[in-house]
Image (cartoon, helix red, strand yellow):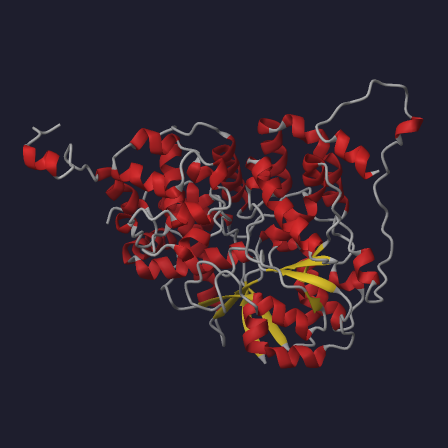
Length: 331
Length: 198
């Protein structure tokens, strides 16, 4: 039995709820026991660190303090979100590397009646415990519907394999954990050199053109390699590539349709769960056609009303866009 | 500037080195920054996916820190463009905590009100405001406030995406609040009085 304390993180019950649903669907076949940290708070993502150091680390450390207090027969905290994982691991590491930071953070925690001795807990990412604790053999054994014929690119993102304070990953730039796991599910894994390139993180919010450039690079390369979908381990990566793909297409005058799912969703499908049990259908770039390749039928959800077709519209002056020439040529 | 002597000129030094800015940034950075170990090799800038959009590459910025160019450094867009991908961090031969130095510079720029573009600082501050109020992130509130303030013209184009997220249950209308918000507030209030001084 593998028992862990779970730090879900804010996105797991909102933008990445498909990740949570699919995670719940695989705990039973893999005999995973996840105990949620009581009253956890946001880790501050990449925002608080840039504003005020001690409060940012205290915000993160409250979660570690709560987890340490709750520990019964496990001292391992599992985070499914890469940014949460990095923040928790970073706070734990820096509080040891710089004891004065640890002391100040504990001074703040004391105001709330808490304390945390750095190094008490192990902070790990979900895919780390699945590959190294549960093991690929156990995962292979649980597969009843192999994903053979599904061409996927594994997208690890950046905050998971780097900076890697505890040396947990096979490589900082080309880790193979996700490749191995997807192969264990029977999927056709395509080599993806951009696997740890950045999706833009919060740049979709503050510098969209920079973000679109990065998203375009990832999506176009996956497309060129013949991928039917991308597979991710991070809510932020999923959000950027899924929800902003349309805007990115508009910006570059391209027409990519590259679905991106969480690796747990594919695990759920391979373990025989139905698409709606693993949160498939809530992605904005639909994975329906990609999943048809492996005989998985996704029920059609109601799409928002299509925009009015051009010829039916009133005669209006043509709106000239930068990419119009290119668009015409594609038609 | 101290009196220039022949020896100093021959040694290529035109003025006393003032390392107070470099030391200040290093002190305020979490962990042991290794900032003073930078050998100006440029691996960081060469590894950076957004270097092309930066005013200065990280290498150049670190040289400016060493040269004591406080205002120029804090006005640079470089820390604000850093996407925290840690490519430079794992490649740096001197193990400088580059991404964390960028966080420190953002904080210093906000404090000195020296940033040139307010989009990124406002986004961070709005995000933190939500967390300090609810203890959790609140995407709808954050997005609405941020886009109205900084990208009002982007809003119409984003409506289908926003509605899609809401109708698919991926963006909550109402924020979630943690149970012991009072405890978190006490911790953060105390933390704001503290600073890393050694």
